[in-house]
Length: 255
Image 1 (tube, rainbow, N blue to C red):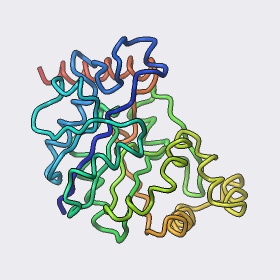
Image 2: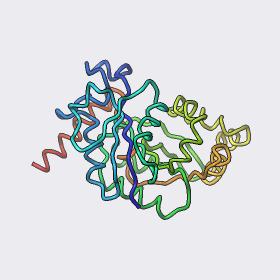
Image 3: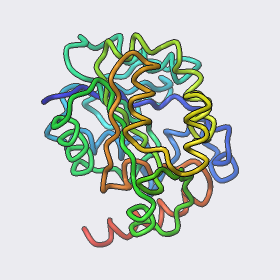
């Protein structure tokens, strides 16, 4: 299965990272001298499963991007940028949406996620990483976890979807994106029964999938990935310090 990829790189640097970087856009913040988004581009380019790559970003950083990608000017919201990226694709392939702030990601993690998706039936696929897997590889990373019957998980920063499923889900996207860092707020959207089960830590992944599929009108599937790199993002100074340290160590081994 070949998929197209859309990298969402339009976020302004107006959050916590502004304290440690003067860059206007988060995607352009350098890690070991290279814009953060370029680590994501190169991981996708090294994947055997990716056909076309579209980067939705401010045009002023276009010249700093790794060559070989299509660039579309970013809009004012994450939802708008998703559709700007999709508009330049033929919508023949599933689309992998990736944020620009996961510089640890690599081709092996991407290919493994896509392989797992291909084994299952669904229209929207979202990765989860267990707390144990995340803390084993990145013990210094501070992540938001939620607890289900199967264990504690953190969400990934990628999503695979059929184009029509994305088009039909536009009405709910802004609500989900606004609450994506607050798992309980997401659960509240599912209804009282699910809130109660979630609070009692008895809500299962399958129940969560079924309810989300009912709301969206498209089948959603959770993929438990062994690769924390899919969700370890850089959105605060401690994350940036960890990225500098980790990537410097990797580059030192490769030198």
